[in-house]
Image (tube, rainbow, N blue to C red; front, side, top):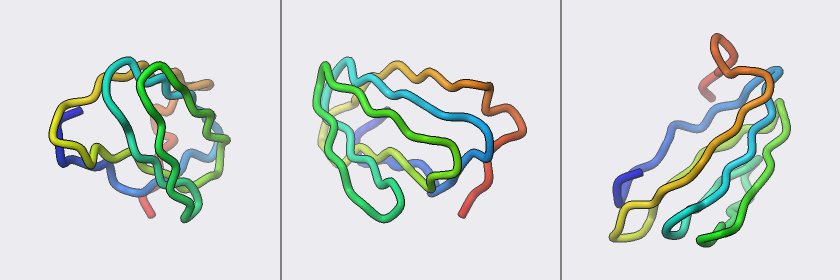
Length: 78
């Protein structure tokens, strides 16, 4: 994820997600709470929770994302 970028705030009705940060530091907003996730750390986001990932640093971040079930047709922008 490029430096200085952010996803739109959204939620998934059915899908839960797990992000694992491989490189860099990510900022998550989940239900209005800000959580910093560092390299080699992960975060679990339950279905129905409004969230977004941001890269507020000056370098790109790399992460693995697992969604269960698929988020296809299951994204509602807030």
